Length: 255
Image (cartoon, rainbow, N blue to C red):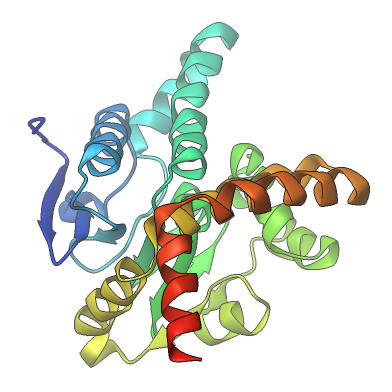
């Protein structure tokens, strides 16, 4: 197990719980936190006992976006320095998308800028009723550039423009209504509901989720015909997995 400085990691009931652990900084993202997240995701992916990953934040907020010190460096960095810095965060989002296991963001409090992007990069997003999402970059003359790739895939063009280019704050209920998140739970029971939600996902077929996740995200850049062809190939692969063969046998036996 790697040693983590900016997160906590625990595993129970087939769920790895990764918690952003900078509550005094509202879990703001810096290079150390991003590195810890990459290592923790890799650890969960390699652990055969883990079937789902739950991403949480310590303290009052899920994640406030980029750390102030990170923003201060932006002003004095060279273009190459900024490219390197931005690439580190982009690599984390890509890592989450390429993982075989489902990653669930459990958002309480505020998810701002890169924090909203980090949550949306996860396969599923649940939130407490008082949670709020906002891409605040435009308010300081910045662009939510890296996270736009995900928001544009999660939302319609008009909705994506609204939240990315105007800095509108979304309540949890509104975020659920427009399809930005999956479910909302009461604040008082949120921690328990989040663990229950992740545990239920963890009970599903790991191979089926891994193959379905891979195909779903592959089709982003495909034409309809290409997506159908990829579906045919994945269909044939899925039939050969032990989970599918056992599932079909159980179904036929019940029949």
